[in-house]
Image 1 (cartoon, one colour):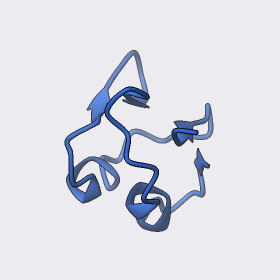
Image 2 (cartoon, one colour):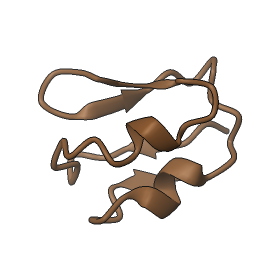
Image 3 (tube, rainbow, N blue to C red):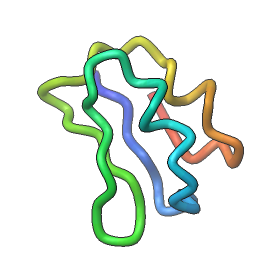
Length: 55
């Protein structure tokens, strides 16, 4: 199951650069993960300063 960014996202961008496949992009006020591209590696969750990413 792909990781998901919750509404707790503060749109800081820390997660975007950590994704090895570029599955994260800025959406409407928060970042979003393309579930089809997500490798389920958890790099983004580890980089999030507010724990807004769930796996």
